[in-house]
Amino acid sequence: MADPFWLTWWLWLAGALVLGILEILLPGFIFLGFAVGAAITGIILLIPGLTPGLPVLLLIFAVLSLVAWLVLRRMFALPHGQVKTFNHDIND
Image (cartoon, rainbow, N blue to C red; front, side, top):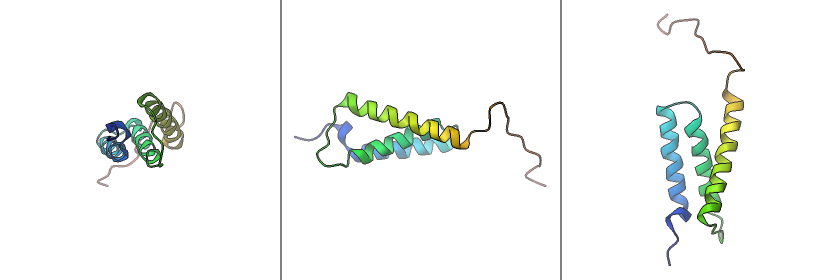
């Protein structure tokens, strides 16, 4: 019997790729956190003999996505209350 589609590792990695592309089109670190979570979930599914149920898999994905988003936010966000400004024109 074939595995359910949510246990197919390459679908999670393909979803991570789509979310990564979406992050390029709509930046903000939101989709990138989900992409990292989906990629790690896909890698976890490569472990032989590991067949979690859908609720457990979604919980793993949610926790990994949240952790990735928090790490990305801490690494790349501006300090609280600051706004990114540009002091020069690109054409100068």
